[in-house]
Structure formats: structure tokens, C-alpha cells
Length: 447
Image (tube, rainbow, N blue to C red; front, side, top):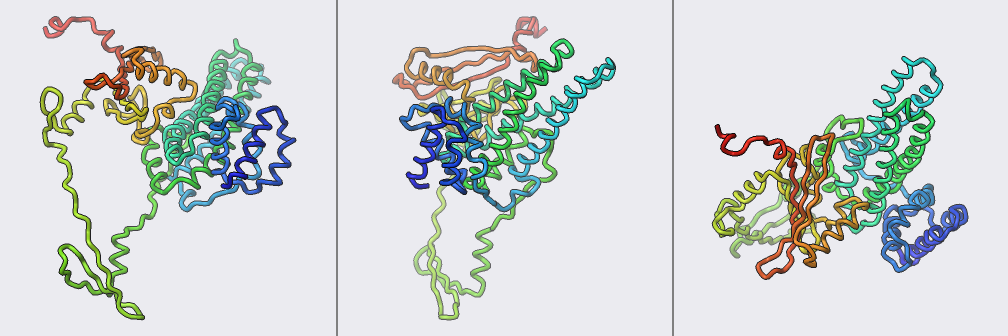
């Protein structure tokens, strides 16, 4: 993408941010940017948010719908093999959106029926159906979490960090709108059907706009940037987060080329000659024009590290394998963020579905700021800065989850070396509800 092209895109969006109407810039945009790629949109947002133009992340998020509509008829499609396979993450993503749209239509019908029905028994049945359908719509959170926790980290790896930040912020706004709908719908008939309908349409407008952004912009960026290995890693970790309404009908197993096997096939008919130089291998390939001689010296295999060999460790000796087992036996979830703010490690204290703070391998190596929803970003920055600068050595907090029956205690502790130099932050999280319920002391408990 040329600098001139990205600057024109930036200027058009700046006009929007400064109050110009979408109609006033649409004609200029259409005349200049037919067939704009989603990658260009990503680069433009990055340029806009990291320039000295005075446009903040909040500004971009506020006009997210305007930006999406601007690009609506211009975004260039991308075709990638296998994306139509039932188990491919792209196909699942689109099928979920179809199922969610269908559930939204059913909710609208039920709201209309509720409003026009006078029969108390029928109203009660409609109310039950409405809550069931809203429960299905609410599964969009699984769809969003897979997007945020599995797709966004890979996008950031390729330098596309602005679209995830903006989209995650809008996702959280949509979650808040849905929570209001659900709470008010549960209170029917006390809350009033017109209030529920109004709240639902406010949610629906943003939710349906997000579906467009996902399919017309987000997926286009991913299809241009992601490799087959990226999609496979997403497919492998998706089950941990679950799916919205639908389930994959089959597993996606792409055809993979075995290069060793291909090389073996290509070497058929060739002659291998003895070598006089150590491990060097020579091969003669017959061609119509004559013989081609190839020499090859394989790399020496480095000795692998013995994970079972005890090493000096603290006040004793532990092997890497033993240390890993011990960390996974601790009754708490541990996360380590290094001094460069990179999420470096987490333990397996519990299965994914039982984790208090969900962690997956794809998050390792990610900047800690990008691992949190934008609405928590300032708190995360304040904690990291306070620990780094030595204002505090530890931050502690708690919250109670009534739905899960957990009383969660969270600690963020500075990790410093023997010289007192800051090396990172250790977060440890545990459900202390079981400890609160203990009613005997140690010795009486042993009787």
C-alpha cells in the first residue's frame, strides 16, 4: 500500500472525525478506492491511531459503524482454499452468524406476539420462549471470545493491532447492551414490553453491524494474512471456548504436503554416489540434457535438553519436569508477565472450563495490554506501572461470582531479582470460597 493511498484514507476519516457527514466523503472515497483491501483498512486505522492527528482509540471506536459503511461496497473479497469446509474456523464463524441472525428474528416475532396478546397463559408461554431465544442469542459471547482470544493474538503478530483493539471495545459495548435486554426481559411483565423492544433494537443495531464488520472486513484481513498453520491452531483451540448455537459437523483436516516424501519421489531414477567428505551426501540426477550432481551436508543434531535431569534450583534440586508438575499442582492459577510486558507463562492448575481467568497457548508471547478488554486497559497499565516503579510490591483484590459460587482472590506481585531489579509481574488467582467454608481446625479435622 502506497503512502499516498493511506494518507488519503486517513484524511477522509479525519474529516469524519471532525464532523463531516458520511455522504459528503462517500463519493470521493468511491472514486478513489474501488477494490480497497481489508489489509489497507487495517493499516489505515493503525496509522490514524498512532499519528499526531489527535485521533484516539475511543474516537475510532465511536465512529466504527461509519467507517464500516464507508468501506461497505469497496472491500475486495479474498478467496482461500478450504474455507468452505464445515470444520474450518471461517465456515464455523459464518454459520454461527447465520444461526444468531435466525435467533434474532425469532426474538423479534416473540416480542411482537407478546405485545399483541391478551391471554395471560399465552403471555406466560411467550415469555418462556422469549427467554429461551435470548439465551441462544447470548451465546454470541462464545463467538466473540474465540475471536478475541484466538484470532486477535495472531493478527497482532502480523502487525494488525488496531482493528482488534477497536473491535474488542465495540464487542464489550454490545455485551453491555445485551445484558440490559436480558435483565429487563426477565422482569416482564413488570418492566413493560415496549421497554424491552426498545432495548433489544438498540442491541440489535450494534450486533448486526458487528456481523457485517466481521464478515466484510475482519475475515478479509485474516484470509489475506493468516497461514494454514494459523487456522489450524485456531481450530485446535476453539473447542475450549465453545460455539454459538451450532456445532462443527466435522473436523477440518487439510491436505498437507510431506516434503520429505515429495523429495523422495523426485529423486526416483537418480543415483546416489558415495561421499568422501564425512557426512556429505552426493546425488546424481539424470536429465534430458545430461547429469546433475547435488551435494548435501545434513545439520548435526544438537543434543536435546534432558527435562528429567535435576538442576540446581533455589535451595535444592529439581528437574524441569518436576518443576512443571509442582507448578501445576499449586491450588491457584499463575500467570507471569516479564519485564517487557510480555505474557510469558501460565500453569495448568485446572482444566480450561474450570479456569477463573481463561488462558490458552496462543496468548503466550502477547503484550499484556492486548490480553485484556480495552475497558480494563487503564487499570492494567496502572498496576504494571505501580509495580515496575516500586510504588507498591503487591496489589490485591477480590470479587464474588454468585452464578459460579466462587469467591475469587487476585494478587499481582512484583518479581525482583537479588539486586532489586524489576523482572516482571506474577499474577495468582484462586477461589477461596472453600477455605471460607472450613469449620474445623487441623487437629479436630484429623479425628
